[in-house]
Image (cartoon, rainbow, N blue to C red; front, side, top):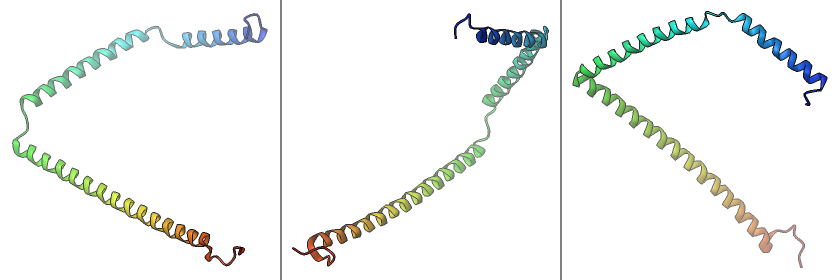
Length: 122
């Protein structure tokens, strides 16, 4: 649209009014609120980092670590078994489809050879 177009001018005026309304609605103390929130977040982050350092300094007992590792290994083994079963099922389905297609192909080839009574004889 050209800038001199009356529709465009109307559109621009409405947009400017919307922006002005938004500016009026937002409080001027908004920046102060953000800074207070950011300070609180910084404090919470510091606490988190302190707790992480404590965890590094005081690791869990080796027994707990062993138990956790065993659980993880068992889960991995179960996932492998599941994936193998799914793979086997898919493989069987594919084999069945291929066998059906072979049967159809053999029937078609027999017809082409001349065993089909419907085809006109030469």
